[in-house]
Image 1 (tube, rainbow, N blue to C red):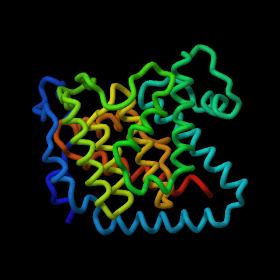
Image 2: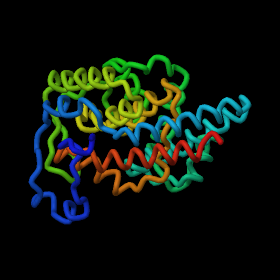
Image 3: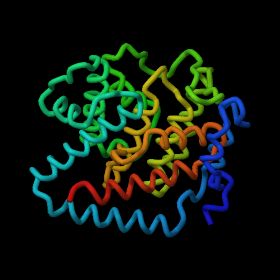
Amino acid sequence: MAEKRKILRYINAEEYFNRTVDERTVKETFNFEVFKDLQGDIFSAQELLEFERLNSDYRSRIKLLSPTALKKEFERTTIEFSWKSSRLEGNTYSLIDTEVLLKENIEAIGHTKEEAVMILNHKKALEYARDTRSNFKNLDLRKIENVQSIIIDGLGIERGIRKRPVGVVGTKYKPLGNQFQIQEALEKGCGLINATKNVPTKALLAILLISYIQPFEDGDKRTSRLLGNALLLSYDYPPLSFRSADEAEYKKALILFYEQNNLRYFKDLFIEQFRFAAKNYFL
């Protein structure tokens, strides 16, 4: 059973986060053994069957949609993904303001230019992933950097693998600081993702590992979510908008992986978001 694995052991998140950052006993540095630990089954047989059933329903529905209806549904998903992925990074645009920005190119009053650019970049990146979907069946360093380049365009952020150490708010975990080790970790991550046969697992690993490695000066988590969707789209699975994800719970799920290399909390969140996407879009 997948649940017996150490990376999937139960941790009471409420109790865990009732302790302060300095009170928690954590893995403070990047663990290269994580690639070995992540090999094998992450989802149970029952969960995999549910993914397949939901995806089969999704594929059946989109076959019945006209080109116009399909375009409108992808537009809706793009708006909601661009809004929520940006909001997870502190963007204060509302969903309605995001829709106006993406449809009419009108920026919301009282918000910074950078917030609008962040949202517009999500739209460009998701459209890029959809238009070149066959290219994302396998990941490599160049494809990851291409996505990051779109995500951070016009925001004054350095492109490509960072050359300086970075910290992560809310945790003592420190990502790799050496450029060559960062590249090594990315290559190992791509190897693991590419060798994984199950598509939802590929997407989950992409989201988690890019966030954990933190290979860029900024835009890592936005890039990770985009890459997860690029993988799903490349294999004809529904993209995730994360619309119903609670921001605090999402951050807790990532921190549990950073500090304990435990992905159960994030896995449950991923399943919840997959169900939401499969049942609410492309109807």
